[in-house]
Image (cartoon, rainbow, N blue to C red):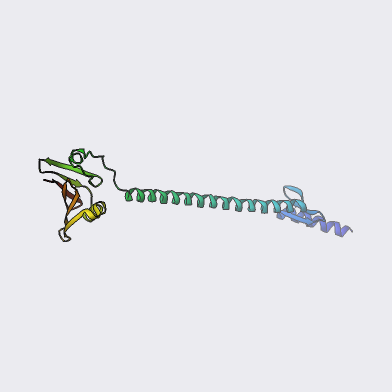
Length: 203
């Protein structure tokens, strides 16, 4: 017994000199060091381990939430840019607005109903006892589109058509009513269209 106590004392002293001695017990571990004696409970270690695992899970959840927020922000930004691009494309596709024109100086001189293209601007009007003439410019415009509009409006009233595709020119002769006949000349001029309308009164 004495030898055992001496050996135990030597063991403890050696541990103290080295730095730390751990003696396992049922409920934990007895740690002896130069700073003193500390009893570490197994349940405390388990709680610490569980706490670390919980913290790790929480950190992973926070990281996933941040990634989700960043993805949502990027998606919203992309949708916003796409929406703006779509709005710009739609705006470009719309025809440009034009000022409302007063054609009464021409229409009041002709008893029959006549067609004047949308956005046509009057350059000049001439009147005498034999006829009334008016020169217009449609900017921008396409001569074939205007020709189709006149043919649709006049229908069977068209009596003649002189067309030159290479020169982008056409002249229509039409009888509007018993009051006389009309001659419409359409000529492409770069992006614009020149339009001449002459109405001859009947004798």
